[in-house]
Length: 306
Image (cartoon, rainbow, N blue to C red; front, side, top):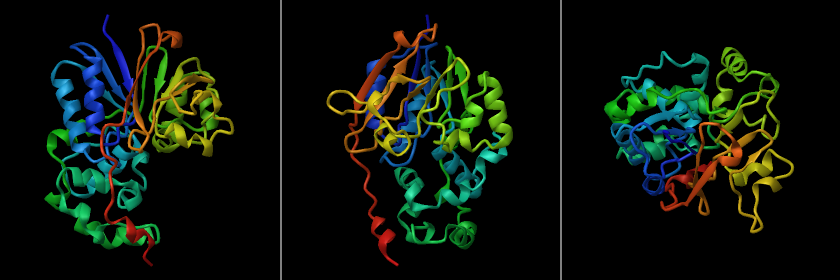
């Protein structure tokens, strides 16, 4: 029987991903699903993309969901004139993404830096907290159409094949979630169709639904919100904490959050192996503590210069 493994947000932590894949020992015919956010924040987004392509070349079925960082990166690549086919995505998912990708705090610069792009270190191209992002975008967007902004074609092709969601093994996989009123629908397929029709951005950005049980039977498996950040969205975080107050991915209230903040100082990368039955009691979890250095932004002090 082929194995099915889902992994949380990787965020450029290639060394941690490498250890995870070494332990998993996936083979041809197995499935490896990324919940999205392969890049940014960590130091080696390029290495993450390369490892996933190598995994696919070995016969592993690779499924990558579209995280908000993939949305911003693809929007930037389209802006830079790269060869990206985004026709398979709902257009609403990219609304505002080209502006968001130039906000320094969203850390798309970290992805470009991992590819050796000098523009990552240029203050001119990035809006900081005190800047008006729309005006900034208007000032610099025409300067992005150059090779220095573009990623290698095979990596662009990987990102262009991302999916907005995936339903399998009695699970509904999505990067961030869907709106509270829609998640209460009794069919996962109807819910996803409704969300895409109204505004697909919620699939990559939404947090309003956290803590609310879905109306459909499938388990919602998601990322986007590091477990240690749940305080801001859920009144009681006890279900996700053990006796040492360590936040861990657990099945609770119809959902499973796989984002364990691997890019943070005390973060780790979480994967879950899901049996064909999709029975949560048979889930096998694997957690790898962060092995990568915490990415430092040498231009971050500009956030505080007015």
